[in-house]
Length: 284
Image 1 (cartoon, one colour):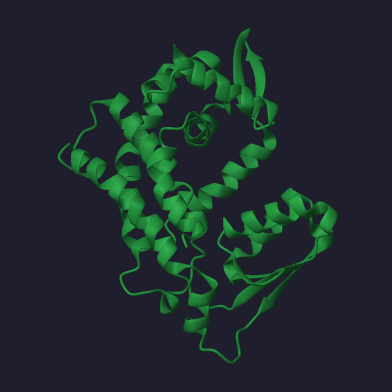
Image 2 (spheres, helix red, strand yellow):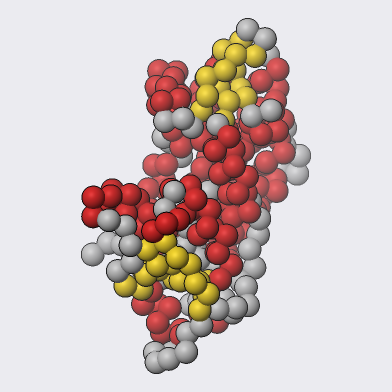
């Protein structure tokens, strides 16, 4: 049976072609350096560069507005969209996971999340379980979930965002007995599935790395924008599935190391030129 990660690995190729995913990346990567706001025309032009049709882009913007992710706002009489305060906070928190290199931490123990949500609120319970998986937690049993201790702040932020504090408790813990920790870690986390996500990302990144490796100076800023935005869209979910386990619990030749290196090769080369391209479009 396929795991959630098998679906994610297959989804990577499709994600960079979805208007909603690309627009989220545009706002996450570029808008905060531009006051958190873009005119509607700027967004449409950037989407056009990414081969997103205008109708599809406008439809995605309308959905984000209805969901409260974006706020319709005029500046100097120009219609545009700003990221909501909640979304800006999410982007700011996400930078630490997506845009910072993470070394394998030392083994400092675990945190346990225990929750009991009433049956009449099962939709919320399902949402909590899904979100825990997507920030790197693993289910031990029922309403008991585990993660390395460094994810404590992520768990607290998640509880607050879903307003489930009164249904949840968070504990620090050590694994004492009886199954060896490396063995039980492999039961808790689908490490092969997470590696599949990383390998899928690396396959999308390698052609971009190869193209730009022979170009010391980025002269085609439009292509830099297209390539960087596409790669970032593919990358930004992968680090969330990875709990950041100590190296002693990981398989040899952990695919996350190479995938991270591949992302930062693209990031270091293209993030600056891509941002400059966006600013030039926004000035028009």
